[in-house]
Length: 343
Image (cartoon, rainbow, N blue to C red; front, side, top):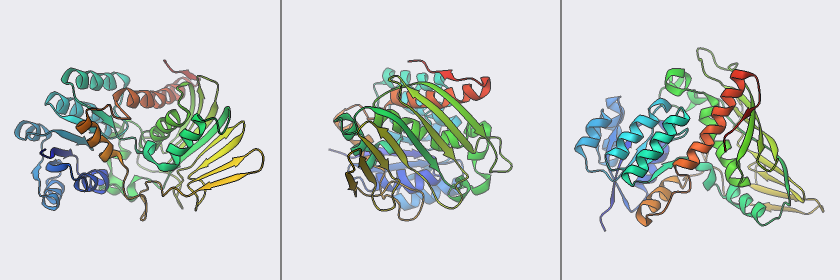
């Protein structure tokens, strides 16, 4: 069988460090084309991966016979470029957050269905070993009834790793739509939905721009969340964790507390009510730091879904539900009230 012909649209940091590398490492894939409005970036990637360089995604879709596309662009372009690729007959892996509104997300889902193509959103936290094990333990009743949680995702900010540094689109509201909440918070909203296997029904939020200058997007956000079964907890997203990244989650249950990515040695620590402690060494979480997880497993899962004609773990519907938590947080800030989320 011939290899899947893949194109990566957007050759910034996430494409260079994740998508392109992981496609290149997959034996089922040929990177056929790359695209970036900054010609030098496209040319550099094209040379490394022996692909054709474009500065226009429309020209790429018109000229190349592509099977699948990764959309690694500023948030405001996720929906229009994903829809264009789906309409051109490509499967699409889109970076998070999938869109800037519920309507855009629904348009993407409709385009995937109309063209009978896969649509996957790049929520890589579902593939982390500690997160998968925690979901399984909860499903098996190891923690008993779940009462509460707290989760956080924070680092020093995109200027440290984004292709454009302090001039990055991440800091520009017209391109990013939201800041730390969209960059980091939506990951944790998706993760908690996955681990708890429940939907959130209410959200309240406090959002600030306090750590970064010359930006009009949030850099610190704390959400209070409630699930359909009454599990309550907090989600923090921040670009102000200046000394060290924090990517931890703690689940408080009737029989046990599960500490995920909270211990420097053990990726999962289960503290049972009876005093027993079980430590799991399951490999590191994906990180922007040196020595972080070498693969996100996102690309391999996307490729396998296409080859096996299977539904991706994070399809358009899943991406939309996680986005709606963040949209609810914005509504809460706007109205100064708890926002009820649609089921």
